[in-house]
Amino acid sequence: LVESNLTSLYVNLPALAYYNVSDTSQLRCCYLPFWRVEVAESISGEYPSNVDTRVKFSDKCIVFDEIATVKDEFVKVTCSLNNESIYLDYHAFTPVKRSVKKNVEFEEEENAVSVLMIGIDAVSRLNFHRQMPQTLNFLEKNLSAVEMLGYNKVEDNTFPNLIPVLTGLSTKELKKACWAKATSVFDSCNFVWDNFSDAGYETAFGEDASWMGIFSYLKSGFRKQPTDYYMNIFNKVSEDKIGFEKRLNAKLCVGPRKTIQVLLSYVYKFVNAMRNSLFFGFFWGSSLTHDYLNLPKYGDEEHRQLMENLYNEGVFNRTVLVVMSDHGIRWGEIRGTFQGYLEERLPFLFIAYPNWFRIKYTTAVANLKKNTHKLTTPYDLHETLLDLSNVAQLEQETLRKRSRRLERAEPLPRGISLFLPISENRTCSSAGIDDHWCTCHQTRDILTNSSQVRRAADRLVKHINSLLLQFPQCAELRLYKIRSAREESSSFKTPSGIQYFTVTIETTPGRALFEATVRYNGNTNSFSIVGTVSRINLYGDQSRCVTQYRLRLYCYCIH
Image (tube, rainbow, N blue to C red; front, top):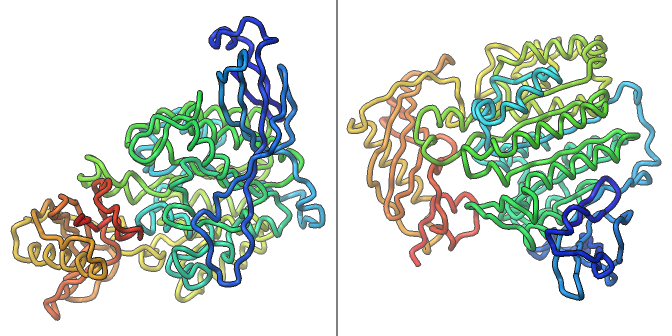
């Protein structure tokens, strides 16, 4: 009944008949502004669990007729007919906040580029090709985007694969640097949007399905909003109040729209508000794609339409576009196959840039294109973003010096900008990828009833149970079945007597499916687990008695 454009709410007149409105004088609509409430700083560093989700609504609902210009960011819209409520909706806006950066002077502003990052959760490179052909075609044909074919995830789920992108750190390093425990807020951490903010950019961060968001799922989020524009409180309120069609973890619809449409509409409004400013925007969509292999296709047209609209409006003449995922689907039937094993580890990544950028930074773009077939990671993407926050780093002579330093570096840095030449001989180890996530191995199936495989499976069960020792509410797991086993061999040098196996097992109680890389040391005749143990089927509410994310994958609650 009520729609919004860049700056206004308006009554959708053709919809009046659907709501049985024949006399508009009997229709009363109003909007109620609401906003995120910042919690006072705590000396102890302890904050309530809702520190990032506190909200306050205005005392006054502002009445409007057919159209109203809105200067607030978030509003609740209600309509009544003959004093009976007939409509409820929520709308977000991105009013200009120029004063935020008024004291910052740009360096090299004429060559600087805005950066727009659009993430689609849990979509492998190949599934992106299968499910989103319209978006793929637009990226390739209209934007000449570069696809990174060897982009390899570095950890299990969303958080540890995006922390390297946003901070350049692993989650283990993040905990040491600025995030002491799961209940700590992230305010002390330096994110890449801070680098852009320091360079004078307006910044934005938003995601849908925010209850399970990057910084909010079993975590506390932020005390102060991390970016100039921060839409998560809007998504939480709107999805809680009018979200529906919940499939597993996410509500696919919010009021009359797909949840993903709400996010992409916000992206469009933000980018348009930034027409006279440099901006960095990071937006992450999970609602449609997090749980199902074949649902991304229902967001294909929306993503293509957003890019097409921005393209036609000239936005990409001064904007680098990054479209990406964090990993492939992590459960379901396909995940029980070797194809699914590979796809989980190989998300998609596209980078598009203005034509003038290609001409001015010839060597940087040439390196980017050469790196399409190289092994690359989220750590590399972080270094790439840092270069985009300071494009002087991409000048020909500067880049030549950096390339020479990189050639002589011993050891090689973990993260290497995609604008620098990456070696064909790069290893997973040097790139910060554990063996368990590395896709540079050759593999062969082996018999599940061999003594070595049985010992590897027993070692895996023992390892999982050791993680659960401090949690008496979790059942001790027992091996029920060895589902599959593979021997891994690498083109990289492996120490003598060392073998690697990937085993998939089923345990009871709960019939959980676990997959792990197990190292066999022939010199000591011993087995050890390499990196993380993957859970490759859904656990539902089996682990409701624990709140720690990693243990939720393993715990089967006794009561």
